[in-house]
Image (cartoon, rainbow, N blue to C red; front, side, top):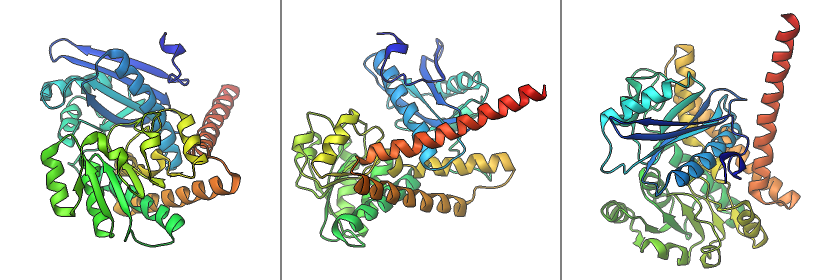
Length: 367
């Protein structure tokens, strides 16, 4: 199968591969859409088994960013990048400086930020070689680690679902199964615990898992056992595609609200969940807080201003209104939530593309 034949290609505007022999950099940057503005999306460093696996991941993630940025009503398109390698053993400042030089060759059609395996410090190294990175902690416009804002969005989404399904304003009496307690999952666990939820959690990082469990009173289970937990809400906060044919029948939760990207292995999984009466809060709506935080940095940089928490709060509140709209329309139209969210995002992207086409037409006629 060629790149253009892949179901994940999905009309990407560009896919770029980078290699630097000196540092060992092997990276792919995918630009799905620039209809609403420059493509913006995180950089994931992962020890992919093959380059084909890395390509598949970056294509899925890039398309997801187009939808995420549109659903959050941000003036940004969608893109993503991956670095092939073990983030625990192969990171060097020089590697991320080489990554910065690679991104710089794209001339601003794509801005990179943090994602799995990549930190604010790593992005700061890339910043030494390019201006086309965001999620920095320094300077008046620096937005810092987006994880706390991502977690806040997931938490508010969980409360939205609790109000709809259980008619309550907090999480008292509800059990949440949290898969993955890294940057976002850890912050989320604290918020869920404070809101009264009983937590069951897992992670491959046993040291961190024990630390978070100790402060939240959570029950700890093995990674594969999380699907069998008797929980009201399943919160996938690690890698994607955990909702798949192998796990679907094992889940007992009535709702799925988590931080992971691309939680549905296939769109058909979303329809099955809907038919079974399981409320799936679409991942790219739920986890949009982080990219909103990053967008504030870009807005500040473009205007010469400073990072504005009030702007972030306004966008996050609007995103929760959009989630309510998605859930309401799903119930009213009897359509799966992911289809409703896709429809809204696609309409916003198409409207921006149409406007750009009209603007080009006006310029051509004037020329």
